[in-house]
Length: 234
Image 1 (cartoon, rainbow, N blue to C red):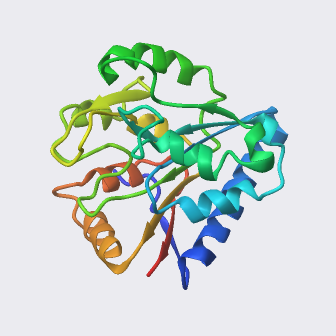
Image 2: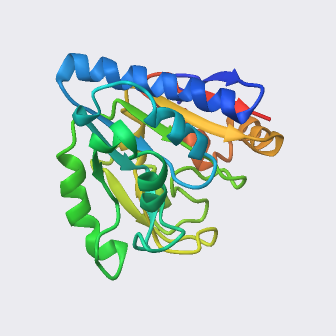
Image 3: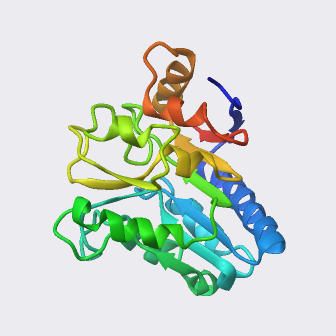
């Protein structure tokens, strides 16, 4: 059931996209802060959003009223170059944006399963629903850590689930993961998908066109409470 079809915004290059996405997210945060006093943001890790992180960190807003977390995390600590939390600290939580309150999705536990209840409690204390969620997408159609073939994919994509997070182990993931669930993402005031390159655009277009074998990205985008926005550049 497609509740709200996503809109596509195309840009000439990654820098133009990053600036527009930073404007989009900062406006969502400002609106929620004005209404409720605080706002929560969930962002993706990896290399693609780094320019966006730098651009968003430069935006003027009341960062002390912002809670930031991740849409997913690899089960590694922040000393690892594969830590998404590490990337956020280096590129987003800088300057004035360093006043934001950051909630990592990794704690000192042997497995994500062992930490799930603790992290669920921490996330539930945020000013939910999120003011904004920024997703990425892999060429296999995964978003967050909602991987095709994931061991907890069905549970994570259940639109009736009351869980905010789910653990995930999948052939396409090098490490165990923790990820936001579909309902936690789609309840957001604003969901943005940030993709770059022709290959990912083709994957996305195919995923949205083929409802018979839905990939995780199409399952998420088709359930957003408010229409998602796709930010794309070649």
